[in-house]
Image 1 (cartoon, rainbow, N blue to C red):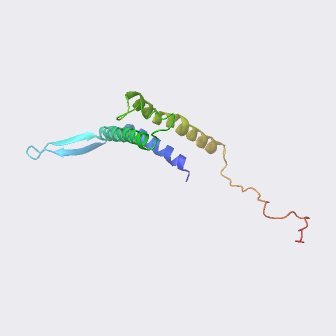
Image 2: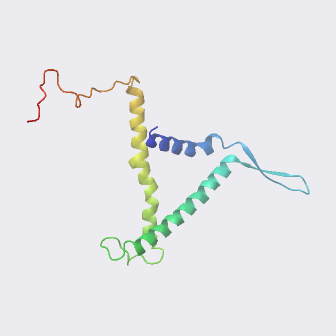
Image 3: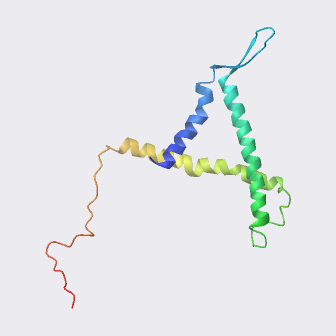
Length: 146
């Protein structure tokens, strides 16, 4: 399987799941005195999980970026190590927030476009190309070692 296709399909599935399956009730808690059940929609659970997941990963990204700049890239040019001490500044964090948006425009959209174009224009007939590099030509003479 193509790694880029699987990544793209998973991105589409994770993006559309809260909206397609969001009305399904999820049992959260029951009050042991009154017996009242607490139900939440699946979309709330998914979107809450996404938000927590994103915030944890973003904090880890900022921490890791600062650690790499402070330890591996110290005394190198063009890495702004001295400028961003501590956990960096807000400008650096905003630059890191742009990475997922850049991934969408640089990888996901071109991959979906390429696979859609391939799916529409292909007849799914696999024709291997001729590999003639290992065989001598029909009338070629093999030189003997002198």
